[in-house]
Length: 113
Image (cartoon, rainbow, N blue to C red; front, side, top):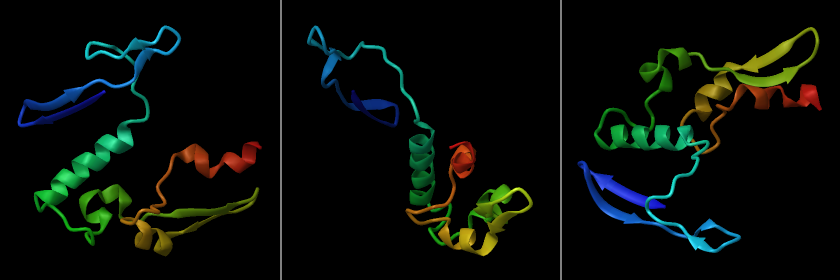
């Protein structure tokens, strides 16, 4: 399913693939299905729209827009007595494709293996 909407008007709307693989029923525009893990995509689109409108530049510190990210920390290591974080490295990685922000459970996944 693909749709392009601009200024409230649909410019492109097309369905692709199968609604049911076993019966080969084609996907139609009225099909209903779950959409998962879309928050990063929606946030990225919103951020890029604000960038296009000139609200910030790629070098703008994230903390100047979102104060809760003013002093970011990278999780470095964990043991029973000490957790290590690095603040300066996080500051440098905010705006590139290898950003350090992740789901909390990814940071601690090794503890549960």
